[in-house]
Picture: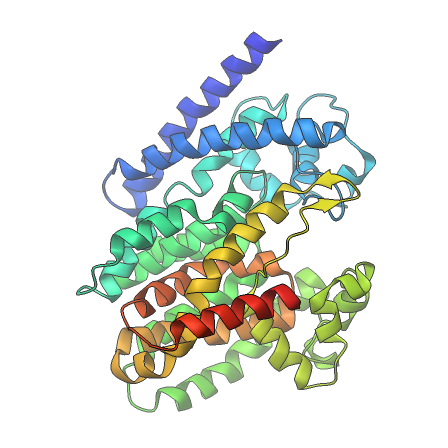
Length: 406
């Protein structure tokens, strides 16, 4: 049994290398070594994460666990496994075959008999992210010397690791959105641009708005009357977005900007424990303003890593991300106006990020969905490190205390 599992894992790694090479050849027009190095390291980390999950929540067979502990990974596995496999009932909560399950089945031609081989293969969904981050950053800020820091930040990002080392779609969505950005700014063939956008839309239909928004901003930002153009385009985009949201999520924007059903339903399960729930229960427009700030500054420094005496590894990742943000976010905010006025690339990316966070904070309302915008935020944060500010140290201290108190 162990021998069979090892064979399946090695087969997944070998096949993953082939897919990773083909993906690079298609979108980069070349095959680079960095994604392969990232893939091998991510595979090792995914195996460690898998065995930690088996130890902590053995009933979930290597997946992250149920409500308040894990995420949807076991639910996706339940849809793609090809043999009888015992999982908790909560793993069968998806009513129909999910697009992500179809996506994995399409890419992975082998029989799925156990979690680890498919988890290992899924690591290719984040393996190009560090290189893409560095390449895009150098394109926007060619004179900046922080591109290596950008690469390391993407490579070791707790958010990328948290959502990319397990069987969920967030890594793939983010990676193909970054491929989309890369193809747009490098003026690649429009079919490649369309392919990347289509993958993002297929994996999460409501997220099609982000490639569309980025494309519009990128192509029009330097043109006269940009903000007027954005207003006019919004008149066309909003009805289309409303239709997509209603068709795929049952969200009717005519009933209000905020997803009240989601607030009272899913977030309501956590009640007073959910900061976002408390924010959304505030009157309009205070709830929208505070939810935007929530998405910008999250995650928060929280010391509690346990739920009912069970170690929640996702909370450890979240804490590490929050620790990084205690330096990056205050520095970004302190230098925001100066960078906005002096650097056009910063202004263009910041405008896209602000609109995107506003959309996420009022329609998505799931903190992990911020990952789709995180690459742009990382770039803005790192670029802001170039500016020295005497207020940085006291602001960082205040920011840390504020995060620990909320």
